[in-house]
Length: 80
Image (cartoon, rainbow, N blue to C red; front, side, top):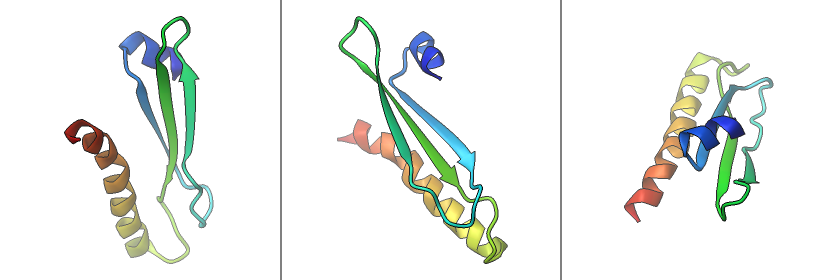
């Protein structure tokens, strides 16, 4: 992912993984220096719900909320 971001000229990478347990895992953020430049690549890894012991309706609602929150974040930066 680092080489992909570097080649594409992006500073933000989002990795989306399906949940592996019923309890949500906290998001992880990694900041990688771009080498000789004074820039940083931000890699964010998130778990999104694809299954739950509470049933499909819970997963669908939680997935919508999680994706809305995560995907709206870059837009908030641009609009400020």
